[in-house]
Length: 329
Image (cartoon, rainbow, N blue to C red; front, side):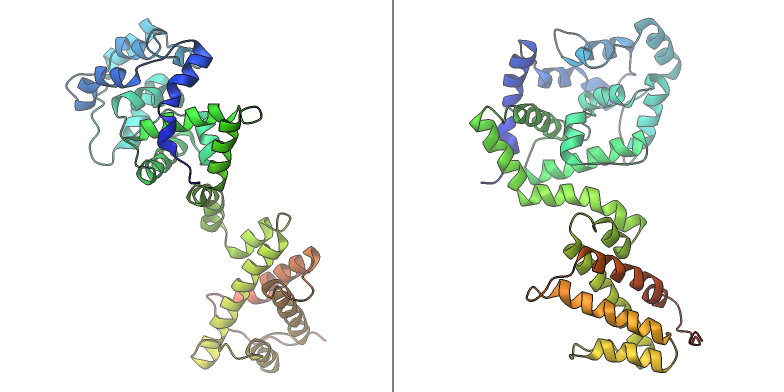
């Protein structure tokens, strides 16, 4: 069965009852901050205090309430307008951080002022989304962007509601060992292909942006060397295609034996050394083992050597002209 995130919106109250002995009306609290969202007035220490009021939220159990007098003085000086226009999210966050010095507190405020666009910076939800970034601001922005995707996919009302439902699910899932309903919900989450694609993309995408396919193949080597080998094999075929276009003004054909023949041609014309041709023949043999499911599969060490040889011999073909090189004596 598909995962139904919306079903965990009402579960938030049940989780709060179990954890805190009471429920909280977060929608009502959002309405309190409407004037701030529209820019009709500036942020005050009193506004912030409402977020840590034990009668209206549980957040004081997780984050320390700022010192009100110090905060009041800082906000009187800064006169922060929380109206959000265009793409100035980062500027707004930076402005708030100059006062609060804590991204969690900033996220708490933004969640209630602009619930459609922001959620609370929650460790359990970050764990579910698998979002990572190098800095607090970039991480929080990426976190909210990812919550927007989940909001749209699961047809939720806002980013804030999406984050709340995910937090409730994370708490509910802790009961999976002793509760069949919780175990079923966790299984639906784990088996939802859209969710797992999104989570995998958060992990893999940075490697693509920073490195390349061969580096990704090397990263995956200890987890699944057959998958690693397939990634490396595809990259090798792309590089062979680049060479074919340079030499023959056409892509490499799919005809059997075309790739080994091209490698032999490179050796004959001294674009690669004879010993390199032998190594690339070994690459092709390993490629066949990882691509074709029948027959003996490649071992991890073979795939690692395959990646080494592609990096050393074939990777220089990408984006540079072919150069003849003498054989070693």
